[in-house]
Amino acid sequence: MADKYGPLFTIKLGSKRALVVSNWEMAKECFTKIDLAISNRPKLEATQHLGYNGAMFVLAPYGSYWRQVRKIAISEIFSHRRVEQQQHFHISKVQGWIKELFDVWYSKKNESSNYALVELKQWFTQLSFNIVLPMLVGKQYFGATNLTNEEEAQRCVKALEELMRLLGEFTIGDAIPFLKWFDFGGHVKAMKATSKELDKILGELLEERRHKRSLSEKINLDHQDFMDALLSLHDETPIEGYDSDTTIKGAILVCAYLLLVTLFFNHSQ
Image (cartoon, rainbow, N blue to C red; front, side, top):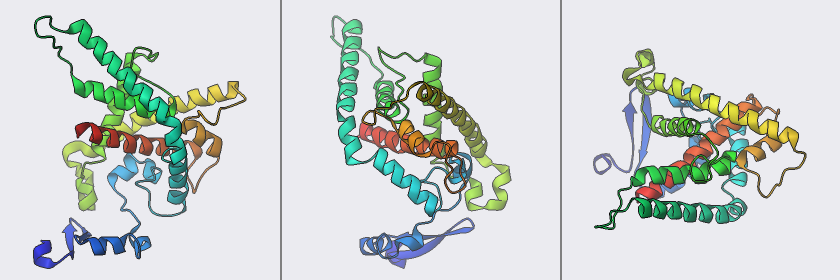
């Protein structure tokens, strides 16, 4: 289509018109000179049901709320200082993962072939969650030293995997609004169920963390996780119409999504 219509053209996606840019010079101009004009985001079904109606800043419309929460996420999770602090933790997790894999091989290996059958997809998934969740909510779900019960671990993993899947789904209501009530494919129903489950999990984690903080007067700033940082900055303080719990849950979800997607992509390579 670019060969036929040029590097800049529009297409209709249902009732929405989309601009297609297939030229790097124009793409550069879009993200430098006219970035404010194209910074907004459409309100999708996923924004409402999975993104706390815009509280997840990657789905939120451009504005004051988006800028504030994005700034917090970058400074507390994706900053160079935080990466340096977490480097030793990441190395220890990978080393522990390799040791556990070796132990499984040693205990299950076939004496004649010296091989053992291992489902690496499960191992990579558990490693990814063991790296991401302690950074965000201070909890590890898998491993020899894991203190969390299996049911709670699988519940959390299943909900986050469903979140990643559903955020990539295209619903009919996003393209043709008057047909959204039909919910072809049942995606909206699944979004509502996943959102309810994630909200319950995050609510339990928040309640548990607030209880621990009430028992401890001091928090080590060098070792606090993302939930601690958010509670210190915005506990009981609303931002742009969102209560503190909604802001914290939305920020944790989006960081979990971005980090897990990055890790899964690296594993697939």
